[in-house]
Length: 289
Length: 288
Image (cartoon, rainbow over all chains, first blue to last red; front, side):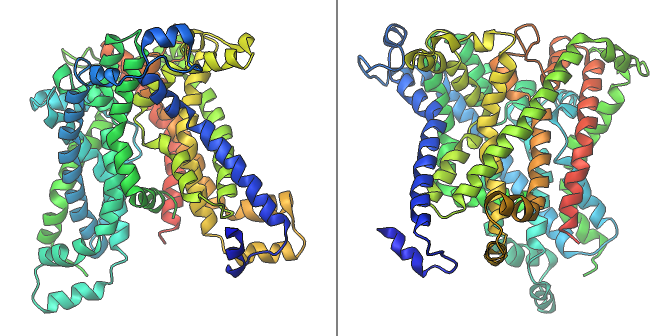
């Protein structure tokens, strides 16, 4: 069995009970995970059956027939396709903007000594913990005044601005680990300050940018409150508030509702599957140091 | 390296201005608004502590606050214990650890709207996963109205939130555990420490930094709660599942009592403020 390979690992205890314990734990965790993911499995199984089938036979029965039409229904008449497009139209620019601006901030805060450096850093850090409720009314008003209420741009602006807090915190701390000698050497060679940022710090920070970018993509994509407050037009809604509309439209057809939810979940799931490493790095570097 | 002012402004200028206009300014303005009465259309009218006095007498406010407190207590007990236990188990190098980690964490990447709809289906009285499963295993007596039952609805929503939050706690503890050198634990067990003893007197104290972060994000998460409540029940039935975050939104944007809503937001913020400070101090401790 593969457990024999563990004898090579340092610190491995040679008590025979340990192998048994590992098997038991494995089975326990496997069982736990299966139950844990039951809502997701259940949703998939429900989204492919007809309401007739579900209502008459219940969930724990073999499906009479399987069909993907409810996904299509959610996509077309349920407008999930449009909502998904909107989500991306909002998330991508906001993400790019906040990553760029916070890399500028992070660079300056980590590399330059000046009065107010720490204060500005604290302002960004404190801001990221503010509850949205403390901001929604003035931001609503500002968006109206700037005539960006009920537009993509209004949402892009608030996301870009708000996420500056966490991203600056994150990138500044990462950039602090870049040896200042690199910048010194570049300066002696006549490199401009912006050159030092773009040619030294930015490339070196790519792993951190990837990590925080993955997190931010998920957070911005999954936002509900701002979309609720700053958008009225159903055609512009992202999937989060779009699902609310879907709920009103298909109130009794939960197969379409869960199909819609699953469609809405796909982008973040894909990001998670492929960029998982960055995701977890982002979470742990940012929260527990 | 001390820099020229103009260089600093080149880098900090735009982000700082944006941040002040969209985040810091609004926060301060909302605090001001809480001392006014405003319907969103005409001008705000200064009214001192009027909104706050009104809040203290408002049964919906009391109910929402109580719900937040229940949420907070459950959140501190359940996801933390669950997350820590799973982290401890997964830390033992089980096969498939990466997969299990991802699976348990995955609810966190789902939008609360998605979770709200899926759990809304689970809680459907007729045909939802929960009632159907209970009936199928012979526990028909335990079925209920769930989201339509005022006594159960809050706990149902909290359960969905726990499902989402526990993975996050697990990740935080896993990171903390990986930071504990193996020889410390080995030395302790050679000295005779075993099982619960080992855990409570050695391991858990060593996890204190992680625990602080976990507690703070858990508390902040429970007080901030809005999305799931709004999607699943809008605070109903009859405010039995209302929480401060949702209450504030409804007062400000549905009832047009913006000053009142601002007061609720300020109270929400003040409750969180204590924990924000603790969190900041923990972050800064690892700074210096």
